[in-house]
Length: 345
Image (cartoon, rainbow, N blue to C red):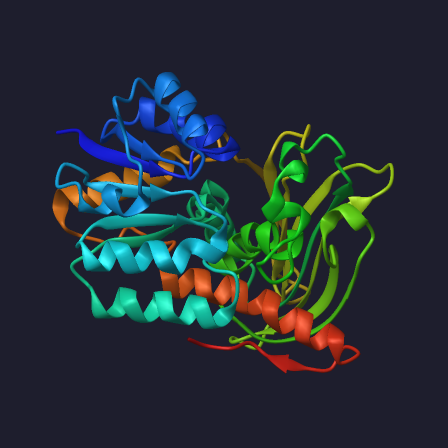
């Protein structure tokens, strides 16, 4: 069975990423669309071979033929979209970060809990990375984990097609680039090591085009007691894009290099617990990583088919935590790096 999808918000990401994934999906068929600028919806509909274009967003939720609303809106409108989904009992996935701020995000979490019969998910494909499971397996071999280093830094991209959009020039979501891209990084970090308890951070603004602070350096403590550093920013001058995640235990270490243009792999080093502990090292490649929304749609399709939502990792609760970490970092920076406890919904 193919489920019918309405794409609400037919902008760049809908065209470049979601439409190809939907066309290739074994579960879904692009069925209808809406955009507040109808001309953009008409262009999208032509590319998607869609016959139905709504004049009002609410019509997408009213349509009894629609099985899933794929809402790719500026995130300050996610709460309104979720409220419509609840009103008309419609499954929905919304773009990350979950909302513009924690107040809106908490309302989405509440609506999700109050409506367990509906799928309310967040489009956060990093939650489904193969690297998450590979890292967890590797970490299980290095004894007690004590610390980590997570860093993703790079050069500012003046050719970024999203720079011309109003939601990017004047971000309504807290942190701008820091939350928009940072939640990806935090999906990977927390997917492996669990939730973050508290943050000490400093943020700065490098580029006027970013709209707000765009680099983040922080010390964090996990709920487990593990300590580490989280660094994120792609606003610098000429430099390589560097993405690394290193986890240190009392019987070894795990190192993931997921920098662009390098073969994606993790290196497991075991040993060092005692002078007699046997040591070894091995590389584990991460092949065909899920860097498109395709895996997300597989998970959503299976959930609709079976009624079992347990495979959905990017729930509102999980996405709330990712945004709450950015919120805590921004608050910490505004207080000169003071410790801030990460909020819960």
